Length: 96
Image 1 (tube, rainbow, N blue to C red):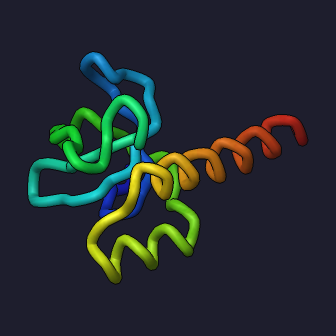
Image 2 (cartoon, helix red, strand yellow):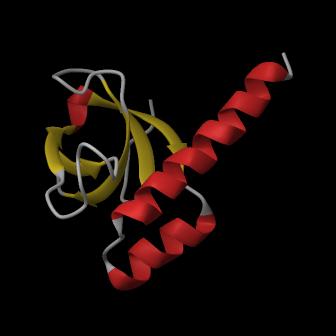
């Protein structure tokens, strides 16, 4: 089981947002602050316990670099990162 860090994509395992893919904006020892750019916006990320999330994938390099350099992302950036992951994931599913 991989530990999630800033800029990783995680799936929520518990709560109202269960089964949603979210991007990690901040972290500390026991919590992740996550957003999806639509229902959970970058201005007010959801604080989730690490144990209530599971690592899904690393986000694209452009998004990761922007978040690590500036410390923030726009909601559009978050939606784009999730879309890129979804497109890549869909392509690998079709190849099976």
